[in-house]
Image (cartoon, rainbow, N blue to C red; front, side, top):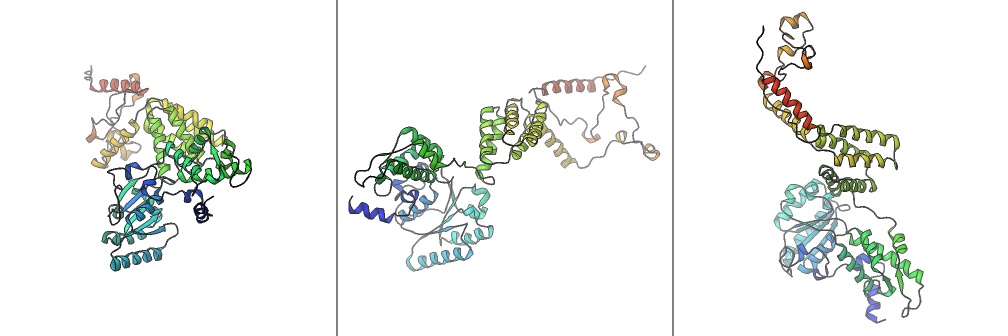
Length: 454
């Protein structure tokens, strides 16, 4: 083993594999070609080049911190790194003061990297604003949350938001192979091997998160090395990483799903859209993603009950009954059996005929209420319970439908100023087609000429 390799190993003692394998230049960066590829916003950078303040938005392990470090090294700019979880106002002021001194004395630029910037309070973010505007610092914020929700509008308007994508399966596999073969920073000295099937399992467990992939790989490699025996530094027996080593290292896959974060809203959104789009396979998949990640089943059931009225309504009135019954069944059964009525209800809702007329009818009625105000109730429909009521004409002229043929009599029950307005428009979907026919028959009776009295 040469002296350079020994020296390199000493420098990395105690560092986790993910830290050791961080790219040392933008050329080594894997993924994010839409940002660093030819002609992109972060391509062709060099010492002295200017970049706008950035908000790096992406899932864990997509390379936000790594990219910030590489930008500082590539631009030859001083990089001050703060964590919004730990840093206070004092830390921010010290960073700004240091950046101001470097600019005034040496004409040097400073990148202020703030990890998890969405965790800064509004006051803390507002305090950064004048220094970003003045160019005292170039802000590089990193967040796993939608910046529109976590970063104040004034600061966000002065930054360029760039989205980092999860690494692809191919990219993660290449990173794993590189780590296994790397003598200086990787696992080459352990003489571990991994076949394509186990590598695919490793990549699947990472779910686009390079940091998690490295963590699982490092533990699995150590388990494989111990199982194969140490041997000598020069002639170690090959140590194949098996599926068992991988399962032990992974200890169950942690699903990316923050109950209060961007991924939460993304999964809920696609869950509802899958039901609305009549795709039971996708609806069950996204529901399962939520439940397996620890979401409260009652939250999922509440969304299903809302959906039954908002997106199905009278196209299938049974849908609301199914959704509410699933909620009641879950309260009776609990977990794990409670997932069965949830799955039954989700597949029913996904395949039910769709109509949003409950939503549109309420919206139309609300619009009239807002525009016309509290229009009076026609006197004939007011209760004529007392002598005073009757003296004012309340109840006079009211026709009791059950006294007429078919239990119906043509009347207008809207306020007089709104007679003729159409609020509920049934569709041709499912049971609403029958309701539409009923409404058409009622309209025909209303518009039919009245028979003269004998």
